[in-house]
Image (cartoon, rainbow, N blue to C red; front, side, top):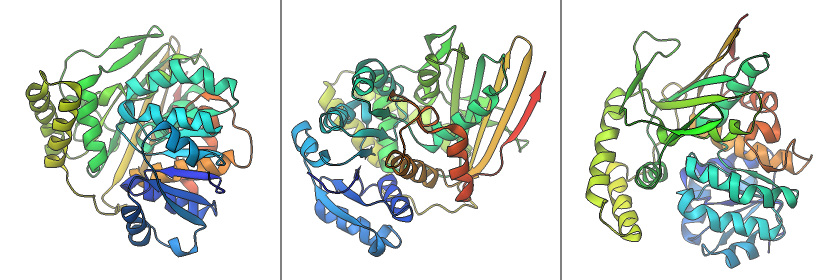
Length: 374
């Protein structure tokens, strides 16, 4: 049991320590939790600026429902960064629900979003708790752009593109490979999930540059799940990638080779092999983001029978955006009821204009460029 209002589970990871950094800035007391106490302490001491002024404690905990329930009890909010979430998320969600705590995570795994929506969402709603998976730059910032477009009436289709500079973290690389091996990517058409065809890399027109950028469905992303229960939206397709074309060109080959090598393995053996492949691709923490290098771009085309809108949000430091959004979610939940309980996106739970204001106030995104055609 904890006396702190927030638990950051997976605090020693790249994203987890950024969440802790922004909780410190919001003066929110927290528990930095994970499996390895030594690693947690080293991460806090070395990678969280100003940690000596934070009100926090460290907790080592096993990844099982009973141990996590005991740790989460007494907290109001659990911020989970431990993935792959389709594999490890159920334990954390069950523990948060048992402890009576709101739950958010940073997932981009569409199958996990669907599981949260269909399996856990009603239980969290009944308990008056928020279940908000997928609060992260790659999904939430583009959702803000989509929601700005949808302020115009009569638009029912969303075409979403997300790009960023830099490379995935160790955990993100492993999640990409595991998710590709175990689930299909979907988009929303006529308010129904439709599986993405095998199409490889798709070039997309990116606002602000002449060169086409290469994209992938990236697991289908979160947006089709969030908007499936939005009566304004019937169709939603999301794709994304990194600006580095050489890195993008290598992703399909790496994934295809990993899937071929592990196709006949048992699930546990396959996951271990995919984890080892991920380590070969990315086996060290990326450096702290440089806003001149780690740029982000979120572009949403919204359309309807008689209207169109286009919103572009330029920003920087995608992992810092994620850390800030997570910290703000906790900060908000500690002070005021959410806009929605049960399964909800960041915008649905906290408001898209509120989240935009937070990102703007920390200098992580520019003013959205919104163009409307009637």
